[in-house]
Image 1 (cartoon, rainbow, N blue to C red):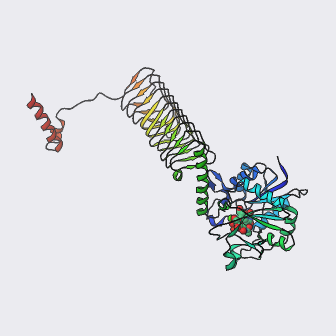
Image 2 (image 1 turned 90 degrees about the vertical axis):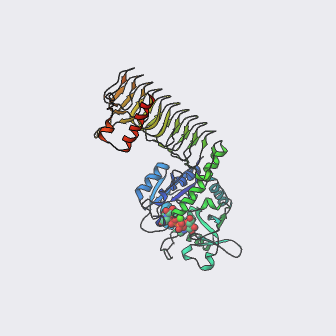
Image 3 (image 1 turned 180 degrees about the vertical axis):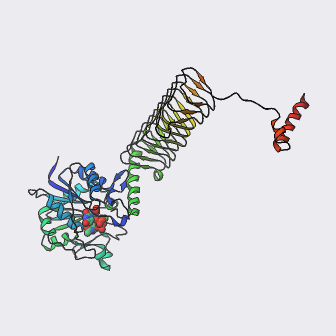
Length: 480
Ligand code: UD1
Ligand code: CA
């Protein structure tokens, strides 16, 4: 049920300078979802009456991503005045006038925070008389974070930013997570008086804590033991640390759901992926996007599947696949490359050093070795000889090759599209198929082989080949 007393703002206007990237920080990805996507998913779980996202740097890109992930979110543009305090000030101004409930402030760059932790923060805030409550934690290395300064009684006094902190304050290991709940009216009053008189020349939201307390209001910090949930992503080292943390959780979740994952360290699974029980994932495997793997299938080692479907009991070994569909009981690899539109029917086979693009391979059909199948259809039970190539591109347009059911093609065929091979036809080794082959026919385009006896002795006398040949011919005569 919607919490009519709750508004949530997600801060995403900063540039993320420490990422050193052309991509705004909050659009960098973790487990297939941008940082801000993780935060918005968590925010949406709380079902607040108002959800706002503050943007400025690369405004259009961030706003588009936010709207796609959370269609009901209101986009708020931050002006030229920098700082988290200014961002929240402008968000508060965008909340409908009648609202006098609580504002939960989330950072777009704190992706691992879960809805349960936020619900507990909200509960603690509402159970107390505090005007503001922040989530804190202790970390082994607090460098870069705002520090939680408490008075002699242990009550929250203020937050000091790392860059503004004294030596003694920097020794504090309790940090501000950047996640807070405020009574919106108390907050509004304090935001108006923020200044940029600090090391970074920004309006710090953190200054509101000290200001509320000085104004005689209660503020408190709720420490949470799971410090990893509060870790911010400011540079790429923190990004990979958060990715590893999240991946370990995802892998463990699938293991407990009945998936064998041999090496969690080298297995990467995006959030959106779905796996059925008794799937086996071997080391060095990445499952990305909307990939789905059905019961009893084995994927890996060393495979990357993106937006790919793997059927029940199928085997996919050392394969790279994108937007491909692999049927039940089928086998793929080792060393296969499946591009968008590759579809392998049940019990079919795509073997070693085979590339398939926009090609349907029927039930039980096999393309076992060294082939390129593009813009093609291969009927059920057909077998493509080693080195079969569909020549689908004439330099201007792409054309289709259609190979019928139970066809057997010889080794090293080229199919010059558009071309059709009827059901049950055969093609000879080395044939270049340039015209349609009727059902049941054998197609061959190669001239009969001629052997010119003695050619080596005449043209390469005295060579190693000649000596070997003469010896062979001599011993044949000796046996006569
Ligand atoms: C902030 C806190 C710090 C806390 C840390 C936790 C302040 C002043 N400091 O520091 O106490 O320990 O988070 O991770 O708040 N943003 C805007 N507009 C701006 C600037 C930033 O929307 O003008 C957004 C950013 O996009 C980001 C979030 O606010 O999502 C935090 O900004 P960032 O610059 O990363 O703050 P920190 O230095 O990490
Ligand atoms: Ca940050």
